[in-house]
Amino acid sequence: MMRFGILCGLCLVVVAPVRACDTPVYRYALENWPADDYRAIVLHRGPLGAEARRLVDQLQKRAAAANLTVEVIDLDQPVKGDVPSRFYKVDVSAAPALVLRYPAASRIEADAWSGPRNPEAVEALLDSPARRQVAARLHAGEPVWLLLESGTKEADEAAARVVEENRTAPPTSSVLRLRRDDPAERVLVRLLLGSEPDLAGRTEPMAFPVFGRGRVLYALVGAGITPENVRRAASFLGGDCSCTVKRDNPGTDLLLTADWRDVRYQRATMPEDIVTDDTAQPAAPPDGGWSRGALWVAVTFAGGLVVLTGTLALRSRKSHSAA
Image (cartoon, rainbow, N blue to C red):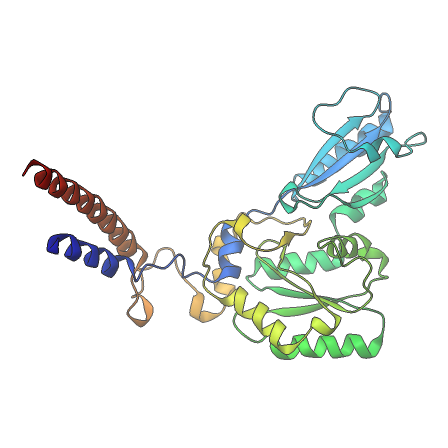
């Protein structure tokens, strides 16, 4: 029994210092979490004409540079998989229709956007000035606070002031203000208001922390835009990544046209204290912590001790039974 207790104590000592991930959430998300794909669905009846086919080809080509997949559905033909019944009610007699759906992982059933399928719609769907700015800042390792204005100057200024003054916790972030009635941003506004089920009918200013490759953490609305809530969100983004599985973290991805393939090589634009060089020698763990290599060794060693403990306990029981 004494041997059993010693081995258990060693397991606890070895396992105790292990941490899931010491990389900040915003950086881990940027480097490791691909953006979930939206689904652009072209609805039509009968064969597509030459012009309609060209527009579908254009949409598919543009979608390759974004987190977007394209599906073409002929409502007159049998369709594989489930098709929402509302699709069959869409009027496509004059021209095909375009429906944008949130990523399946978001579990949002409502359509993100819908409208006629024409060159202007394709362009608005995939690009806008604000989304270009968001993508550029995120690519440089800088989370963005999107402030969706209410249209009431006093309320919008107060909300902006709270966000500006309390987003200062690492990492460095910026604020981008967005008018609800900006025609160039109508798709982005729709995406934000549809990211949670109770936002569409609200008229107050809203603050959306965006990180990673366009992931909206959640919305702070009206009276919920407080110094405490802003600091809490900023602390989460700058804190250690406690869970590296994307699905176990909050948030919904935006539809962005961006190239994230080289984000691991953009660290020089980040704060100095988190800049790393893949060719440099590993730095000593801070505050006496353990390096990741040491952690893996410790975990493996602990696992071996657990197996050994079980084996010894079993043998001990057998010897007592034999006696």
